[in-house]
Image (cartoon, rainbow, N blue to C red; front, side, top):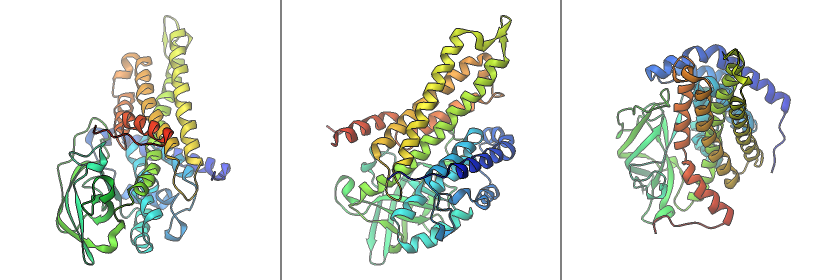
Length: 387
């Protein structure tokens, strides 16, 4: 069902988020990127105090109980200036915390959600493995039930907030059934014996968002940490669609920020005695940027509005994510071109936007994989990529 959105409340939230982004985080964003500094814990707690970390999570656990669109609004405003700050809101409102809120047990919600909403703890999702990226159902990490406990062995790769998060939602094989049939999800605390981490990756972008391997060497957790057992993979990935909407919004913010900076620049910068915007070639490029940003925004808006307490329409989400991811890469590239030599400097921040745009396109399912999902969802059939 389509949710009713309080436009005034959403507008007020947008103004607050934009002010926080500009005044508190914009002055630090470049330095945090250059030094690869993880988002400070005190700042995460500040976002919790503002209520940003629980906007779209249930009120009974300390959240705001607001529609997802409110959280996406805050993510966008923060991400225009500082992606690591926006990532905190993304992870708590559209990431694995939403899986716990929608599919977890009451005990799991009471144990894990309040500290996440306060900013005292973080929860990261652990799906990808060295041989299971786009082919997620090829994962080999095991979570074997043993009476009232579960034993986890294996390793995860490319885990955003890996080594930094306090808890992990681990997708693992829980029996010997092939493909997705044997996969479930279990919550693993980072301080459990047997949990360790690889070195933090030195990525092209995402520099304030740590990424590292997460390793499980006979890690034992209570059976009560199992969120979903095997045979419910479709539900897990249905909930993961919410994270893809958050991902698309991060790309939207990057494209919008590049567009905003370019609109200002081409009106201020002069060549051959007149502003750049007076040249027809500049107008054509600027129009393309506007078209692409607005198309992504409308697709995200539709996908976010068309579900309430259920799960998103996966076709609408795939369309939104694919469009937004590719838009961000193209629009930041055009922005760099229209800025000329200035666009190639760190001073103007466009290269940082461009680097991050590629990261969000890779995360959560690449545009190539989204295209396969689009056709699969459109036709209501699956395609075996192994033959």
